[in-house]
Amino acid sequence: VQLQAYGGGLAQAGDSLRLSCAASDRAFSLYMVGWFRQVPGKERELVAAIGWSAVSTYYADSVKSRFTISRDNAKNTAYLQMSNLKPEDTAVYFCALHRIKYREIGIPVASAEYDPWGQGTQVTVSS
Image 1 (tube, one colour):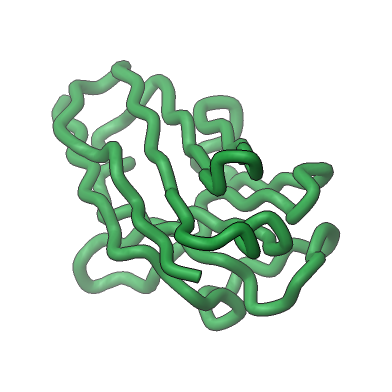
Image 2 (cartoon, one colour):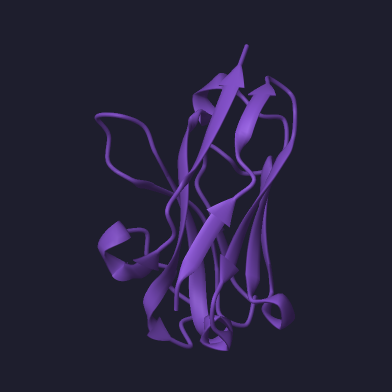
């Protein structure tokens, strides 16, 4: 499965953006999806994740109540709706699939648990 993340851009504090993660294969529907972000000099951080059947979700404390992850398996696409953006949300955002099919509970936060990855989309939030 190949992933393509898009939808990033420039925003002002308080704005909203929606990121999309489009997959090349219907097998996408069988895997948990994670959205990560990375800033220079820091490790990739899991921002949000959604189980393969969308029953379970995870949000990092820093984005709870502001970001919403969802998926549309019919479109082989996952989304990250980001609201009330803050300058500290500035990062390159990546989507990735968990390595194991049918993962729903116990969402792992380590980036090593996920493969493949999309190419990343830059989000820049100005104050």
